[in-house]
Image (cartoon, rainbow, N blue to C red; front, side, top):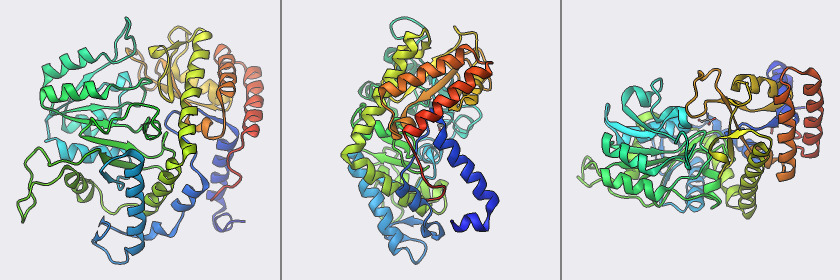
Length: 435
Ligand code: DSN
C-alpha cells in the first residue's frame, strides 16, 4: 500500500479511478500518450523540491550540482535526438515555449502569419483570445476548401498571403492538420519576405525524431515543441535550433558588445523573460523520455503510430466518412461529420459513453461553434503505445462506426463497452496507480 493511499485516501481514490479509466478505455485523443513507469518515477522524485533558476553551471541558487547533471543529460539527449545544435529544455509547456519565441522574435503589434485555428492551427498561433492574438497582429493562411488540395495547405496561396501582409515571422505547426509540411517551401517564402520561420512541432515531434516525417530543423530559424504527445515524455515544452546563428535583430551582450546568438536570446526569453524556476523533476523525466526515444524501438513505435492512423483513415473512408484532406500522413485523423447529421459534441459524448475518448474539433470552414463543432479529431499515439496494430485499429473503427450510427442506443454502447474492455485486457497498460 502506498503512503499516499494511507495519508490521503480521497486523492488516492481519484487517482485510482483515473488509472482505471486509462487502463480500461480507448484513448484516441491525438495529443495524449502513455509514459513509461520510469518517466513517472522521475516526475515523482525529490527533484520537485529544487529551485534552479538559470542554466547548468550558471544558477542563481546553491545545491544545483545534481540537477545540473540531469539538465545536461536532457539537453545532450535532445540534441542527439533531433540532430540540433542548441536546445532549451526548461519551458513548462508548449505555450510557454511559444511565449519565449514571440518575446524573442516579435515586438508588440508586429505582424506574423500562422495557420488559422479554425483550419487546424493552435491557440498560441494568433487566436484573438490568446496573448499571441492580443499582443501581436495575427494574419492567417488556411487549407483549401475544394479541388485537388482540399483540406491541405496550398503553398502558392501561403506565398501570396505572405507577400501581401509582409510578416515579421511565419509560423508552421498545427493541432489538427493530418498532413506533413513542406518546410523548404515555407523557408523560401520566409526568405523572400524577410521573415523568420518558426515551426511548432508539438504534435509530430516524436514522428520527426524517428525520421518518419519531414525534418523542420534544417529549415526553420526556431522550433518549439511539447514533450508529451508523439514524443511520449512528461507534460512539458522545449525549444530547439538546428544550427545556432547570430541574432538578426542586432542585439548585443551588455558588456562586451558581442552580437548574441539566437539561442542565447531564447534562453533569456525563457528565464527570466517568461518563467521563473524550471521544473527539475519534469526535466529529469524529459531526459528519461529522450533516452527512450533514442532507442531503435522508438522508431518502430513511430512507424506503427503512422501505420495505425493510415489504417483507421482508410477504414473510415471505406465506411463513407469524410476524412478531412482524404487521409493522413501523421498520427491524427480529422473527421468531418457534416454528412452524418451529427455534431462533433454529439459524437464525442456518444463515444465517451462507450469508453472511447476522442475530442470534438472544428473542421475547416465549420459553421458551428468550438463548443459544438462539426468534427472529431482522433489520434493513434496512445493506443499504439499499448500495442495496437493496424488490425486492432481497424476493429476500433468498426466499433466507433456502430456507436456513431446509433448514438442514442444503450444496447450498442453496452456491447461496445464490453468489446473495448476485451481489447484493453488484451493490451494491458499500467499495473500500478502511483509509480
Ligand atoms: N491541447 C493540445 C491539443 O490537444 O492538440 C494542443 O496544445
